[in-house]
Image 1 (spheres, rainbow, N blue to C red):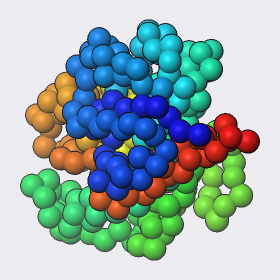
Image 2: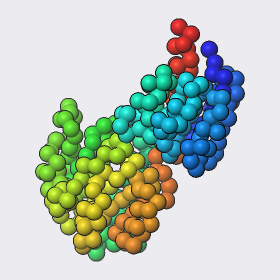
Image 3: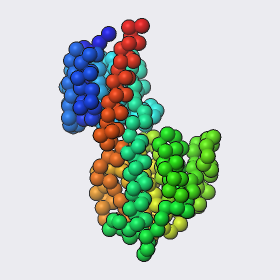
Length: 298
């Protein structure tokens, strides 16, 4: 079984690794290296295509899906946490009989390295930001993780390696070596808070920021802010408060707005989208397509 036409509707990052391999499973493969400016362009790009690849950057609405009656397969070149947080309208796709599949655990290593390196640079006064008058070490600091999934666990283990005391808050307690705290106690206890949650999940509010002491750090590397934005501004304007962001965590408007604060660090790059991550992603995207097509044969 093969697809007639597979279109990578935006810059998915997988072409270098599986561009040729996809031809064994599709009669025609088309890659786009930019991002469609509107839904009209999306529909034009997908003309006659029965398969789509899409990154996390492009929202595929119910309107787009309904305008593509020939579509059978959507390979999300990103993580599909759940239907609510997906950039693809999964419910609309299912109604139309379209198979939608995402990829897990491909960019976590790069994010972990960024978090640890950003903290070390901050505590060692390596950037223009001066954390304290004298450089400090990570050892002995309390780090709190909100969302102890795969990435949260990786951050926890890396932080423990550097001597930090690691705590976590999750919807449910887990069997783990790390101590569970209520959200209130986590914010009271920890010097560093890092969130690892699905897109469009906001869990930090004014009462949480009020619990954080001076010389505290908020880290947000997910695909959207995990906090109430007004409450964050109220907090970051206080002395000795710091924040670290992945580029994908913020809209262009927020990135521009945050430039006025010299206590906010924003990566210039998508930290989880390294060469290594793109390779892992591409391999899993290919497996997802093969699994789908082989299932049709059965």
